[in-house]
Length: 151
Length: 432
Ligand SMILES: [Zn+2]
Image (cartoon, rainbow over all chains, first blue to last red):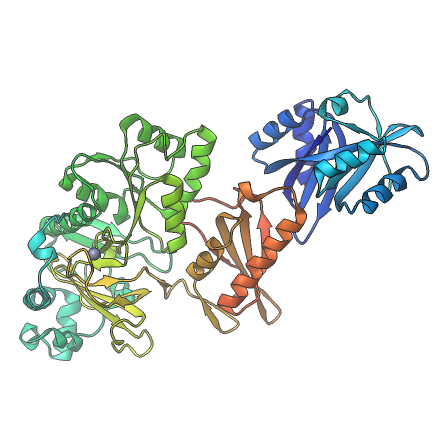
């Protein structure tokens, strides 16, 4: 199963992130996870939301530059070594992780790790063979309130 | 195919004869003005001294400063009662200049605009939307009169109000437009917003691009996105306005109407003529203007003459796309840079959007150039590395061309200030 990640192009200037979250709040979109990566003068805001299609369209209506891509949302155990298991698995299979971030589903029980990989189909198969559960957009939208994983 | 076949295809020697006869008349007419009257007395020159076209060099060059110093009536060669129109240049640097026209001047000017438009294939069945500022600026009325003379239906839309422009195009089946190139690119986002595809939802066929120098790549983009032919044009208010030079359907240089103007290219430093085909400053002389003849006017525009005849059969000389104005030239760390050079490089890089801005600053004793570049919307895939690569590529491309390493900032599509007139490409924050 694949999930969708929204990416918003943002110049590094005050208020860009607030603009994005403000628009989503107004549109009653739930943010599951958010990460920001920045470079020299500009950055990309990555979002996992409960309704990616609608979120994309309301962000674009406000003039933002948005792109949507398929990522894998893996359910892992929220305990020491939970994440390592996943990463080792991908490493063994030579799958390159472009970006990764996670959030807690149930404290000390389950977490979701979002991985943006270069070989989407292979990744799905590897995870399936290893018995790891992945979530799609619907499953993500059904998730109850959660806490962000802290790094 | 030709508006005036005999004139347009006149063999070189006959064209020169015509020019010589008209130049003599022009000198004679000009001597009635305060400025040229005084100048000819000082240099001991009159129309009898013009025996060949070579003799034009005996006449001193006229500059914009001369026009300013003799503002407003110092160049007038007829009584004020004869005047029917005035136009004024934007005056971005210093005092504006003013040009007066008699009824015959307007007639001749209108004719070369009609001739130019006809040359690109526009006919009386066309619907022409003039998306240019009317008023003191010559671009609006000049094209308006030319298109009417040609017999087309003219929609005098004027500049700005993008949604209405698109609505007019759809409602009245506009086939030809006159538009500033940077605005044509900006308008694409409005088309998209309105859900109108200029290629399939309009009947556009021809665009006349004017009022601002632009690169070949910009033309190509406009042609591709609109599904039309875009023709470059050149004019300046001191030489009437639009219609001085225009591309034919070959799109390989702009024909200057030599029955109306004498063309020279000089070295802007030595003021000597450059060999044919070499770049220099364009100098023009009016041949058919009664109200305000101007002789050997330094346009400050840099170009070169394209040697050899044009395949279209017209014998009038062609100039290359204007490289820049000597006024627009930026000097940074001793290097001369034209904004159009930067545009040309940027438009060649995939992923670059439609707008950019150059910012110059002085830090201590050093000048710094920052180029803010809009990213193309479709290019953005959410990948930060891809953006970093784009930024690096732009830096490399510019460095290779202008020999200075600029700071390049990528900005969101549509975030730079848009203009419905000439685009603002440079902000110079350096103190004098
Ligand atoms: Zn030609």
